[in-house]
Image (cartoon, rainbow, N blue to C red; front, side):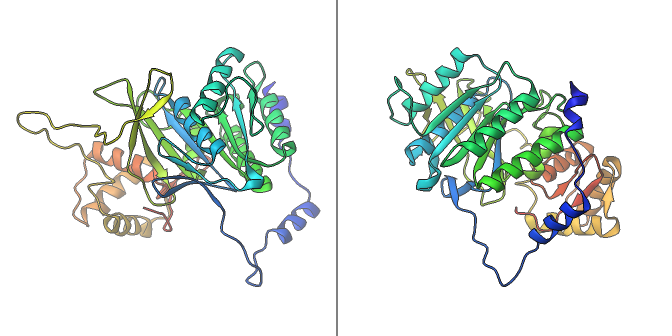
Length: 360
């Protein structure tokens, strides 16, 4: 089955490549409009037409509840939790794709979305189409979703709840590159926004598998949904990676009506009595953008690409030059942050390279 799946990846002819080359050329004589902004959090743009984003989190972190709020905001073209949706009138249709749950549980999600949006939950809504694809193979899911995207009028937002189930092997570079390329193709061709959901690794904050690496490298925004450390009934939402201005994290809980409810003025960590604990090293908060830029330019000025161990050694030296002392543990944390913010990237299993045009 996997061999059949991979056979579809074909090289294009020279003639086709020439046509695509000519069609891809930019010209200063043409006007290219800015992508319409359709999803925001506190004024920060998290979703535009022609791009895709993702939510990641560990099991039971309430990722689907969080995405339900995004869809509900889109259906009402208003605000739910902290999400504000502004879909154009010709892009009001939302396609929700679930790859994991049964029809019964998918229906519960669908009803929850409608109630969040203040819409009747006892009849279908013209702006919402919900697909339950649990029983199909990854290749069948891709083909079904592709047909739905290209044949649904007025489509503006697509949710893929379980993009892991659209590949056979989450650690396959070929499969991961293919599905991410599909997301970029679909969003560009149809001028829609796609939001995907993926689990985190159990041992760290990285999105799972090679497909997680590709999502971090290519997504417009990656939202992190995680349980509050002191109260498991509360979930925090923050931007792990965002191209636009970062937003203040917010929190929600599930109320008595089984709906996500915003916690106003919530602070995730209260001060403990007694002697304060040493603050955990945070390379995003404890190192300035200027220090990052100088250190990275110094490291990659000596060498264009690094393997992981060489990168760690080079960063320890270059960050020392800007007054930041790193040990092995801090260097690992730094590299994770640099990857998540796409200040450095590792594509298709290659070595790490520097992206000087990063957004901090």
